[in-house]
Length: 198
Image (cartoon, rainbow, N blue to C red; front, side):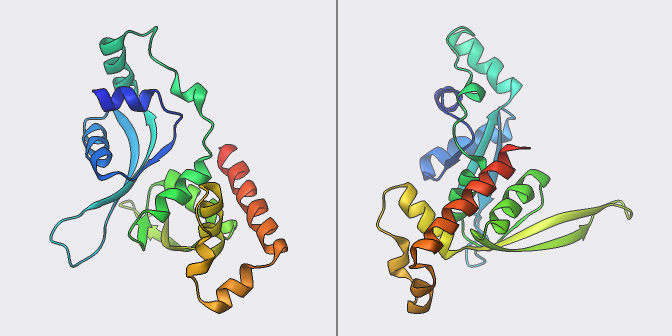
């Protein structure tokens, strides 16, 4: 319950990567108290699926009722009013902390991934998959990696040393120019606008 209250006071959506916090997220998602996208590891060497990261979209109506019962409705924050995080940026952070590649099938998740793909921030493959009903075709996206541009943007955003130093010389040369940096920021801003218009 304490972690649910904590989430209710956060600007959502938010990317969770701490193993201790991920345990809470999995339980809250399973009980229907939050709406989240979970990213389990797909590494075949493991005998179980480790959770790499999760994107918490919202506290559900049931979750809000639980928070109201615990702290009172007047004291509960309206997290949806505090939403200052870009959904596109949160998806980018989610993929940064996920054991890639990963296949997305939920329409909301595929839309977020396609916004990042269009901006050149991830490498991904869009596929069509037949649903249970023969006439229904569902779009899926396989996210392969976060691109050099995406890694650089995340590094600058969080004040870390540029991720560019860890790349091959030809990649470094490709993204070293100031114009490339401006294009990366413009591309992410465009992705944010696309994600926010939904």
